[in-house]
Length: 235
Image (cartoon, rainbow, N blue to C red; front, side, top):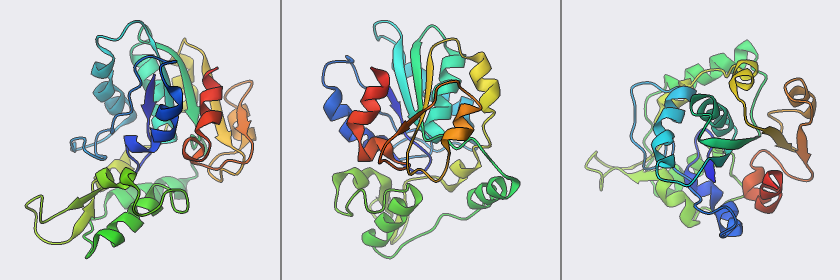
């Protein structure tokens, strides 16, 4: 199983899913996507570029794998299935934002153009990470999950203060062509959302697939709130 995080997060957000998966799915991989966490920064970012970056992780695995992607990671999962159909057995896209009014697209591009911010304390940098990734109230500031999401600039030889590990340019990944991607994917696809996810509605997903799933009681980061429910989408 390959688990792909959303914009601004890291592979660490899948900890609950990985812990509950056990040996059921064999190898379970939850990498940092380019420009996030410990992954390298690139001059530009795209969904296909992210898919190409994670494709080598599937080398050596036995047979095709299930790919679960959250938000941006769900789009990357579809791009990966289109890129390497023989390597992907099924896709679960969770909490993908599928409606992009012009003002939302412009806001994302504006964030991509912002300079890298420096924070005086680790606490301030962690607070920003939790807000960017939508994890406020779900992950405590001292959770080990956040260790890979912030960087001590002095330890990195960059000067003083703290920064996010995320490259701001990752916000420029673009607006997904969901209909186009789905038309290129031959494996089974499940599109799902949390009941309280403000970023995508059941009705919007129903335009794309005949049987979208809404997970009761969960929000945008359903994989953090209810990892067992997310594993249920694979079953």
